[in-house]
Length: 426
Image (cartoon, rainbow, N blue to C red; front, side, top):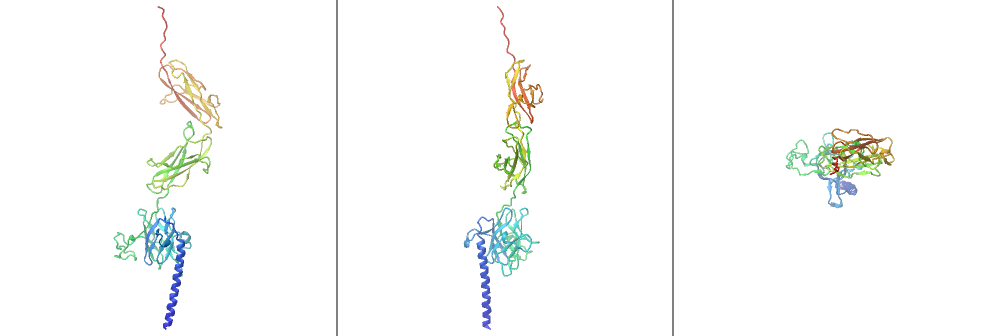
């Protein structure tokens, strides 16, 4: 009988050794997988009622391994946690396929900060699947966006049981004693260690811009041509403001040969939420494309946002120009306005406006901004006039060609005539 007991014990011992060896082998394989960087943004400890502590980060290289769990910019988890009793726990999407139900990947909702999906112990075997569910119908893990601490519970099975991510789950006032009797795993009065899982992940969501628009000037009399590009800053995070923008303009829709690149322009302290950029351009009769990137006051940046294309005029607008002669005439003296105005055609060639067909002149020899423009002459070329009183006069020439109208002003200072002398015989 003793021999049979001995054989049974020896067999049990052998099976146990084989199981341990298998787990160790699986964990060694997990160690090879867990060569994570030290920049993972989740750290701290969780507590399982059955397997004890679960570590989420190690950057000291203990045992030759750095490991950790990371939240990506899209909210998806990756990396490894560690339990000394069951080994590596994977949050990698590639190792979570075939989960029992729902979406397998572990992720945090960037709007409500709820964590969902699954994690998996890599030492699963002998019928044990090792799945850890991060959110169920009446439980779940969540990240407090103010403290960046994990809260709530995850559930596995009878091997792991409930996993608490924060001591406040049992100890709401943080005095070290459980006060949450509504959880069976938190008996009232039980001592609670100060533990938590925390992240440095920023929940600041990227901004965007809306109502991108192009406003052309009333005329293109200024050269080179320009437009007003406007947009409205928008951010899903309430209270965030625009701190920077960048605009790129090109006559190729793929932005392969930039005409303009504003670089990163600060708008800190500028009134919002509407902004504009007024670039000068190089070419007429060109279709331009533009795109915009914005940054919020927490340094989150948008992707490129495309604005509506626009086309510059067929050619340069008229360039009125003249010189009064004389510039300081006297009352009733004939003043001639020497015209040198230039006009342009579609191929960019320049010509004297007075020689162009389809070009009209309008002169106002006594222009007053309050009274408005009055047509005193439509003569194309060197117009003339006289003035009856001595005072400064503003002369405005307005020229219209096939696409637009431009004007220019000159000042004429009219003086009293010099006294006339004649000799009287003695």
